Image (tube, rainbow, N blue to C red):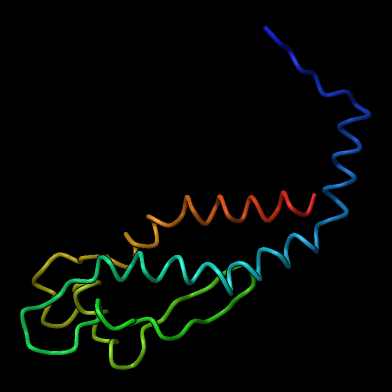
Length: 128
């Protein structure tokens, strides 16, 4: 059995390094969320978008998330105008209210969380 104990001196050194990178970590995470995360989130959601039997342009085949809004430590992917109708089956609104919400946006986002967390953790570790 091996037992590792962190000495006070080592702990203090780690804490100094972590305290010194605060702003850099936030900047790295914001950059990741605004540039890379949407490219991970969008395909996960699109793969769950239902395809109707109607003869029309379907969201699953046509990159429906054309916009994003960036916030501090957050990003929101938004459908392009022509695919705004996706809110109806997703949230069971309008004529879809008789159906259960499909929640493909929530399920798609949920599926990406482990990858997003791993990527952000790697970004933090790069700063140490």
